[in-house]
Image (tube, rainbow, N blue to C red; front, side, top):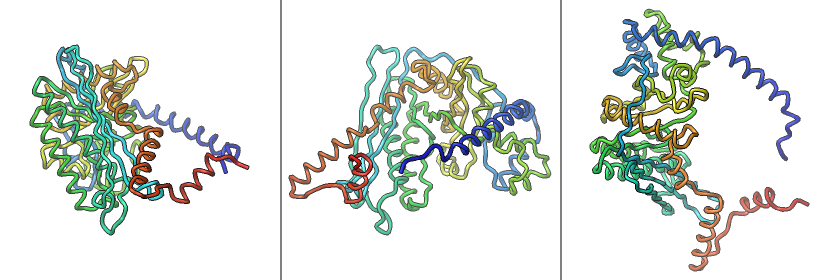
Amino acid sequence: MTLELSKIADQVSAMGANAAQRLGERESLLPVVRGYLSQFATDPELRTKIDRALEAGWFGAIPAFEPIDARFDPPALPHHVNIVAADGSQIYPDSHGVALYYVINVGSIVLRLGSGETPRGDTTPTVCFDDEHLFGEGDQLVSSQLVNARRAVAEMTQLAQRAAAEANTGATIALIDGNLALNAQHETISAAERERLQAEYIARLDALKLARVATAGFISRSGTTSVTKLLELGAYLLNEVATRVKNQKGRPFSGLIIDTRLFESMLAPGQRSAAFEMRQGWNRMYREAGHAIHLFYLNVGTRSRPSIARVEAPEWVAQDASLLGLAHAAMVDQCRITDIAYPYALTRADELAVITTDEKANFERMIGVEMLRHGIAAGPSEKAATKTMARYGKRR
């Protein structure tokens, strides 16, 4: 059975009307929120409100060391600079496949700007097929979340190794796609495994810090509201902060204004916002390790077509004007190369990392041949074979 569009036409129409209504509400709220950003930049009570809100379990963006309404033009990018980027992809384990395994493939690239050298790409594929990698507590097959976390550690490992080596030759920027912090907080990942992965990941950040590499995570089309949550907090009366945070009722913006929409109306092309510290609970371990994750917003688009990226950086980058400026300038320059508001180096790293459908099919044929060579007949399960036939086979 296929998706019968005629049966959901009314729902699609209602969805369009709802989107139009919310757009109107957002546009009317936007000047108010923008005004709050300027108003609370000099509010002497804001820090006290933040302290009270934190005690009540609030999380959002916290002013770091710059006025919250500040805007910064990109500094000049040095003529000779190294840009390193890494990205990864995976094949998840499939109990109905020809064999039980998973694959992590990391692509990385080094651009030595001003050297005249061609970019140097590399890939690091890893096939995991033994019990140690495939099974966790209770002999459960590894989850997709755990594979994702292991892939993120592999990406950061490759990034740190190549960037630290480049830092010996000059100023170096390291870019990764997505959030800078490791996401290993999932019920399918055991506490022991989370601790091991986080320790390994933080060790890679230690290496980047030691090498003074301007390290950042680049997130396009972010839907987060960290800064607008701060402005909501500023709108509360001081004596009602704890109560409003705890019950979450009557929020001034009700989630209508996301951060990127706010800064889209404020930042000129190339400009970044102030840096803020993130106060989510997971950031505590990074803070204790000297890598507290900070964020800022960056307009990598044009005047007629702004594009706001959320950028995350460790505190030792956010608080170092030279490193922060280097990362800022490099990302603006990289996005101008692609003309798609996304860094060129990350685009190339993704191209190197991605595992195509044809490559997966060829890899599984390779597995089948190797297993036959050892006297084992390999093939998909009956369930998988039936699904394939139903979806792609000839219908009678």
